[in-house]
Length: 434
Ligand code: CMC
Image 1: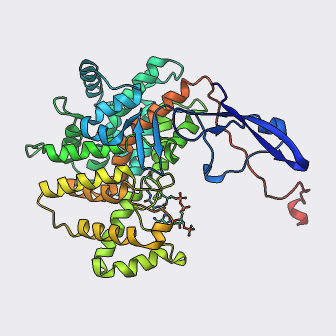
Image 2 (image 1 turned 180 degrees about the vertical axis):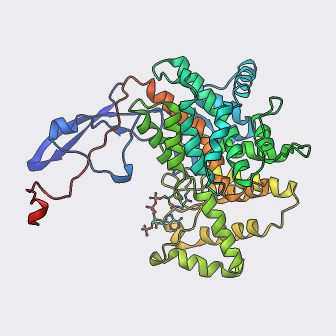
Image 3 (image 1 turned 135 degrees about the vertical axis):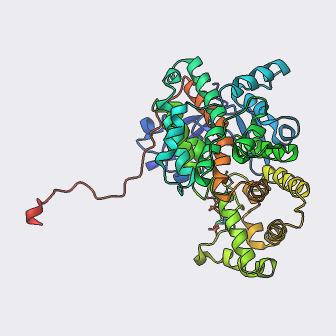
């Protein structure tokens, strides 16, 4: 990489140190501070990585001020309109859109890896039936490394590719099994003549006693949810996958760390939390009680947040939220639910928040999770499964980011430093003398 300039740091007693500045293809430049410790004896301090680029990546670009999201350079709006999820997955993994022949081959390869090792199906019965499906997912996805030894050599590009395909192909099967286990229904094996999303819907909702009819509008909605959640550059779970992978851990173990991180309510758990919030608000009186609720959100002592609002990077309307709002309309119309009280409440809540000085000042806009919960609920997906759907979608982003990192000659084990604030060196008094 060629430096495009330099930055000079003035520090203790007027000393100075210079650092190269690099530019990406778009977006802010970065100051390369890798030599900072050697030159100054100091670290940077950046909790939450507010100003730190942890890697180079050519996969996803976000302009949070403008509300732009690009996968491999293509705007999310165009991808959502023209591609299905597997075409999007191909793009994210390989960097270019597939030709029709490449797409057919990729679809076929993924489709032929959707079954899981039969022994893995026994794994589920070790969990309590009332376990949260994300707890089951963390365990089962991590356990894939115990089943697929033949693709664990991270230094072999073909092993990496096979693991990526296995993860993308098997996640829908595992998510559906996690659901079937919690409701006490038999597992449904994948079927090869359906699309990725249709197959997933069938594994989730069909029962042996009835014929399952695929609804194209609902399948398309699920496909869109998957597309919109497929990657989002260096978010918390992706950074977790990269950090775990930087030690050389196998890809299945790394993806399970991503799932664990995604589970938190500030990240992937937000759509579940958002739907609970809407249901609770509805129970308290719905639109009538909006003012009271917003006042509670603005009261810092209440600890109440408007879930589905705000984002670390987007300081404008999340472009995924716009697309999800559109899908929400389509699904509710298809199902004859346009008068759905939660959807009406969400629209009213969005309007009030967007006009309120508290949210305007802080640039808090709806994020993708504000509407995705309502769509998933309409599709029949129970609230506790929402984050699993997010994990299924994000697996492609995680594995693409992991693959990019492993192939990067500049990769190093991730090892942040700290500002130590504990006790200075002191001598121990043996327990009998304390
Ligand atoms: N409701 C009320 N106030 C909020 C909210 C919210 N949802 N989000 C941020 N704020 C306030 C925050 O209290 C702070 O106020 P002040 O300046 O007075 O202290 C200000 O806005 C800036 O917030 P921040 O906490 O510095 O923002 P952040 O970048 O650290 O956090 C966030 C981003 C997503 C964690 C946060 O906005 C949030 O908790 N939102 C609700 C949860 C949510 O919807 N998460 C889904 C994110 S999108 C899906 C994903 O990518 O995982």
